Image (tube, rainbow, N blue to C red; front, side, top):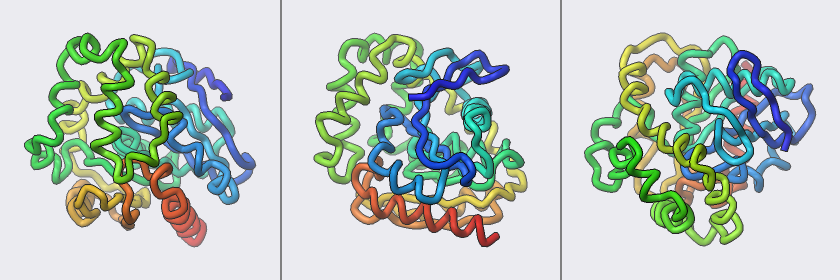
Length: 283
């Protein structure tokens, strides 16, 4: 892992790099409860087109230092700065779960610094169908994780069984998330600071939703990807993105995949990002 002390932000971001720095950069952002390891199966193939950067989000894994805020626009600022300091240019920000929320924030609020954004398997706070999903009992953890201190009390020292519950619920093919990956994800949150950082992402969701509720012209091309294992379609999410101001929007389905696409459907995931990168070149 390389480590970047991000100027002006007081954090050190650990990231895995692959490929040649002269190529367009692809910044791959994990979500909860993942780490950069989520992307290891696809780094080599993606590096054929991109300079690939897969960081641990602030305080997770080998990254150190709390960001000024867990709001997704602030996290996007930090992570884009880390990619820039690592030598990345023509950056595409791609994220899964919370990483997808950050990728949207990158397009919405930092569009002049990036070339494109990819949002995978997540709802964007404040955008339809946000309200509907918050009322879904399967999304109970959004409210629980937002409670101060209690989630840490319940999960500290029990990261592995707690995370396994969500892995089994959110993966289309739970066996694709092997014992080795499950252990690595749990280890990335073993520090109390890491566990708190992960729950803080949820505590900031109300502020994220309020921030995103004001539409603005978003010129950055955006790809919405979704695995179909949970029965939801990209079509459920595209109207909210368009209403938010996304002007150049495409979508694709990752057949048979859940929330762990690089592990469950690596080839389809790589092809989708390669195609999106090629469309950036043509434009």
